[in-house]
Length: 216
Length: 40
Length: 237
Image 1 (cartoon, rainbow over the protein chains, first blue to last red):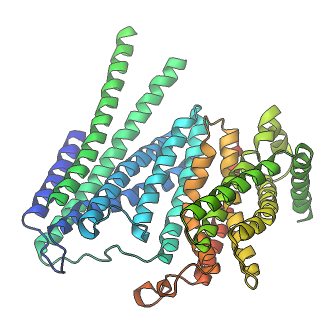
Image 2: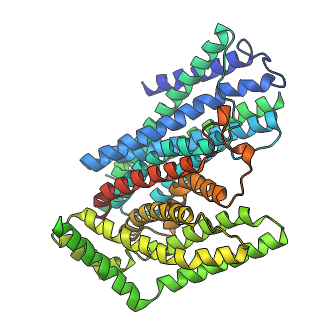
Image 3: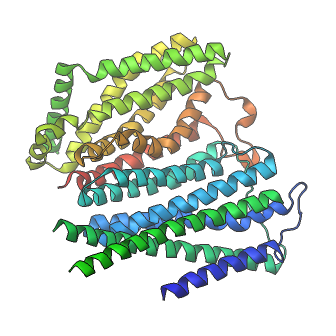
């Protein structure tokens, strides 16, 4: 079952990449925007996935505080790591995008600040996770931090509106192929995220079981 | 064009790197589990 | 309601008296604040940056780091001798402990504010004669935001025996979204933002002082309530 999922994820991602580079290539609609706009096929899905990982983090945190079941703690930690991965991709592709379009690697504009802070939030969670030795306290602290971190995000979106925005507002697709490539890449990335969380949660569960048996 | 190649390769690199890390962790766990069952 | 006020006041006074007797934290906060102000003053002189642009940055940096100092100590005393168990065994709601500590931190930052703001205004040569209520208001809002998040995380860091100096990282990362309207508000107050950046057309959400203050109020309300509710989970054994 898991092998099938991995295979499916990669097929989807590969297909979307191929499609985006060949058939679905965005043609120059505005002046100066050339083939680099294809970065959107990698950039936007990672943004969606990173945000969804934070949502999973919130739900897992609330579930853990409600039930005290360690499974939710593992899911939360796994989704924080996945959020870190996706936020890294988001920021990296965003920086390359910015360099290609506007000539500089980064600028304080709302979307860019938001994605940078998403990255910092996931890093802070991971640092906190590494810093508490006792599993029960660690789970509790991380759940609380996960909930607070998620509350930060909508406020961030709102407060960042105070600054002038340079980020491209909407992407429009001209042909159906482009839309299909975009949908495929979103689907592939979502599957990838699900896969990452599932695998990491299992790793954490096995590790905890091994450690607890060692202690006994 | 080279920026596009850079971005796509960075994305794939990050994804693969993390999957590689996960794979190492799984192998390590399997090794420990096997060692445990062999001891018992 | 009376019981709530009494227990709140009891913990509040306990902490204030403890601080008064040891006299450790407030002087350190003030010294740190002064250091930051003077270093930034030298920088602004050397780089000839306008005073109105530096002053908000200096104020918020001083607030953040001195606030962190104050919050480190919030639960440090409870950690020794396991005093937190005594507080938890008392027949009061756990949230009351949080609110009391929060008020203590807010008060410490207010005292700090009273000392540092005149220093900053003097050092940078800025005059805000007619807008000083707004200045105090913005700083107070920032104060509440920093304290609310800091108190919760201080409890988490102190009571969960977290290794390393994590409080700063956690608090600063969470507070980043509040710093945007906070800095923006102060920049507007000191007159550092030119007129063309304030809202027209697609940028209509950008910049008035009211929106900045509104966002800070939203942030403060949301986070104070959330931290108050989550506090019980952090100290529960």
